[in-house]
Figure 1 (cartoon, rainbow, N blue to C red):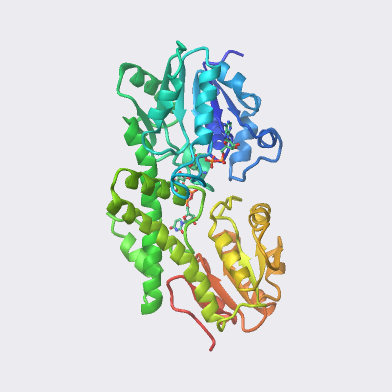
Figure 2: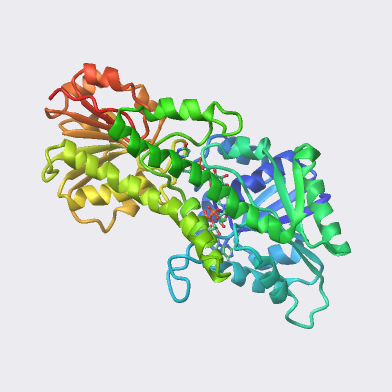
Length: 458
Ligand code: NAD
Ligand code: UGA
């Protein structure tokens, strides 16, 4: 069959997989190929057991795979045969050399740029889908134009705003699609080609165009603003605990102001995920690079509060449980960084589990989708750790239950039964404020929520 366009995506991860599956689904007239250097990942994408858990993704892949969606390890052939190339390789925080712990590590990105240059024999539109420091497109263009090759390359920025757990809906009904380009004749032509792809299912008024630097920067700033809201309410949760104000009531009152809005005001054990911390660190690094230390300090505060909130949670457990956790069995309900994903990257549960082990507690972990990743995350942790599928089994004989992830199922358990099977006095620390604290108190638990007064029997 002859397809209207041939589209390639390099990087078959949490972004590349769902994003390209959506394009293939909404545009049966295009052929979409996803390539990756990791053959195991590609084999999983080609199997019945996809490498990532995302509600609705299985159905999308089943409907498109081997029809107009293909997964392959042949990156070179992919580059040769496709003229529109999305790049969604990982851009983690650098762990070595200048900028270690702050700057984005661009080695995977640069390797891809060089590979595109080497194997291209026809003009290409290269699209930054990964989150990148502002002005990366400039570096990309310099690499692509570094030889005498007469092939034309146009670089666009098209950052992805999907959130894990809701990725399919976010892709199907995005708040906006952002496309940044050079404002030259060729740049605008490339931009229009990408607009046409999205216009197959996204209303045109939601497709925002911008200059390429605004587009790159907007992605970092979007994540920084979202994370800032979580840190803001988490900072206030500490004050609530000192003053008998209730953080949920405060969030509701504050968020009802339409200028502020109600979303991203759920106080929690802290934000996790592969991007918030990484992208803010990247923003902070860029500000320092440009000599904007006050601006850098401002954004660094968002990360400091996030760390403070995680440690505060552990300190609250220690204080409540008579200043020692040694030998106590503590059950973590959830390990994923948020509900409806198996992803545990930067999950606050990793920090809490490690701190509890340091305090010589025995840690039992349960999660409906993230236990495999939890085992990997804690592979080198010292101490007694158990991984248990069933939450009732996991909590049996425990001194405390700590809610780490807001999975709906944890709100629906029988807390009277959990109390009966718990070691007494029994504690609940609700790191997500998903439980009814009064009910849990009435069945016997001592209940500590985030930003609310404790309910204790002593
Ligand atoms: P990921 O680690 O899940 O996937 C990246 C993939 O790229 C991996 O499968 C890896 O094997 C592959 N890869 C690395 N180098 C390669 C190369 N040279 N050639 C071919 N494949 C290569 O990462 P992710 O979560 O999909 O994130 C990718 C980018 O998207 C990051 O910049 C991230 O900040 C951004 N982003 C992520 C999310 C999210 O929800 N995870 C949302 C928006 C944006
Ligand atoms: C986030 C952004 O929401 C996406 O727009 C962006 O594309 C993505 O990062 C990215 O660049 O990777 P994601 O990390 O998947 O998406 O999930 P979020 O829903 O943003 O949650 C992030 C963290 O904040 C989670 O740990 C969540 O539990 C926490 N959170 C969120 C709160 O603690 N309180 C809230 O009110 C909201």
